[in-house]
Image (cartoon, rainbow over all chains, first blue to last red; front, side):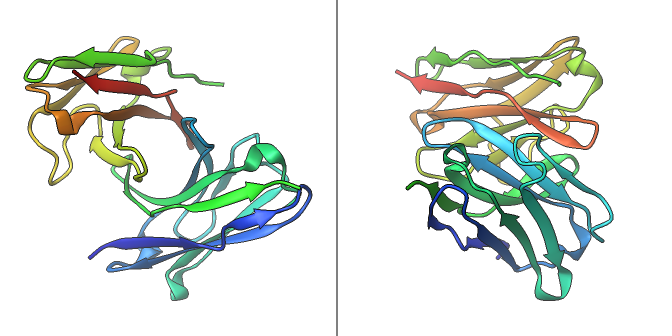
Length: 117
Length: 106
């Protein structure tokens, strides 16, 4: 069964850091570009970042550029999101997802990140 | 930056056809996707490349995209279809989501 599992979420103070992990099972991520998408409480979906199969191409939303860093370890079948200088507006459920034929076809269950003092 | 606009809400009676629109500048020149998100669950891809259905998505879900508008159509809407729906397109190498539409089946 294809599965993506996010971990590493939690409560952090403004200005703090957190590292999210997304580990795949049932398939290998090496053939997929990987994306992070977040959803603030009661709000819509917001794309955060993407990383190509060999990490050659990395993109960020303007809202996180300079603060978040995406990486991947194909040998561990995992992708990561390092989040620094966190703000209250970064509070959200963070999903990782794969892309096939232009659509985000597999999503994890999400990891809740709460930024609050 | 590129924007996609959806109506906040759409209502439909059971068994009827629901249409959800997504507008963007020359959206028809891009591929559109649609996602269904039930409360407390992760989004599910229901349409990709304008009109293709992933495996396991019921035939009552269909899509089209032309001009400045993409449309998700749900024929014979069922109570289980009640959810939030998001359109999505690509702007260069970044993903753009619409604001979402709450579909109510009543």
